[in-house]
Amino acid sequence: MTVMEQRGVYRPTPPPAWQLRTDPAPLLPDAEPYRVLGTEAAGKADEELLRRLYSELVRGRRYNAQATALTKQGRLAVYPSSTGQEACEVAAALALEERDWLFPSYRDTLAAVARGLDPVQALTLLRGDWHTGYDPREHRIAPLSTPLATQLPHAVGLAHAARLKGDDVVALAMVGDGGTSEGDFHEALNFAAVWQAPVVFLVQNNGFAISVPLDKQTAAPSLAHKAVGYGMPGRLVDGNDAAAVHEVLAEAVSRAREGGGPTLVEAVTYRMEAHTNADDATRYRGDAEVEAWREHDPILLLERELTGRGLLDEDGKRVARDAAEVMAADLRERMNQDPELDPMDLFTHVYAEQTTQLREQAAQLRAEIEASEEDDAVGADGEENAR
Image 1 (tube, rainbow, N blue to C red):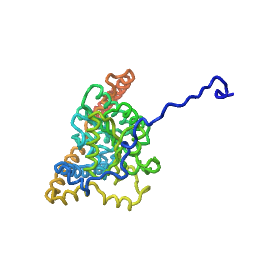
Image 2 (image 1 turned 90 degrees about the vertical axis):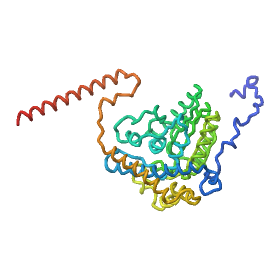
Image 3 (image 1 turned 120 degrees about the vertical axis):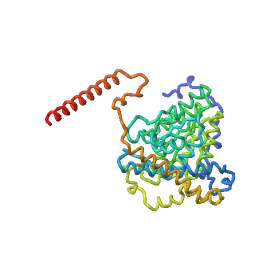
């Protein structure tokens, strides 16, 4: 006998009036990615901003090319190029104020450089020289994150803490479409929405999570639609339209700063090169697909807009290219210098106070190094005596 069958025990009552906790309509993204370039909205865009975006895009493309060449020369262990995605990278950096924080993924070295980080320091992690290569607090750039999506909860935590302290700070966290399949992504968005944390999530949907296309990851109408499930606005933007990405991100940052809570932005873009130098992209996509996206190159789109409006001529293009070459030459020269590394640095900055285990490991390594140096000295003396 069930509870419902026990007379005098179960007393059904009408349920309370149920209603949606949040109106979903304002949270839903547009049906098509938002665009500025080539539309009437371009005429209202700030001309100086458009010029700066262009110069940063050109510099970013050259940065990607130089870093890729350094990888082939053995100066970098690996480099995940963002060629084709420069509009997302640059717009993310320029949409933030100096006091804000950027939380990049492993592919977002260009965003860190556009925010002012030394190009060599941005590559130090990928060369294996140091834990991060820069001081996150100094630059307000979190460590480049190789594990997928782990930086997203960190961004939420920092943003929430800043709000509790009364600091006027916004965190912008970047992730790829593959990262949206990680649990960290869902946890971060849920906490951010519940806490109304001042954080902006930028998903660079470049078509593939290494070799896995988007339709093998999600059945959602778009990644931006995932926002409504957490109670935050979702924005869909053309990720190759630098002006559009900057406008959408700037609005989201402003909204977060004013107490409006988080926003999820999906930027539809394309990874023109392989996932990394260890990847063979021809195994999962054809040349025709890549060539079709070349017509939607972010530099080409912005260049057409600027030249069409008389804001860019051949001299302007040359100035941008020359500045990019200066940066590349400096990067090449400095990266070709062998760094002086101290093995004991392995134990530095792991914890604020070293644990007992770390101290034991450091002592063991120090003893091994000293023993090796003594052996080298004895060997050198033997060779000298033999002469």
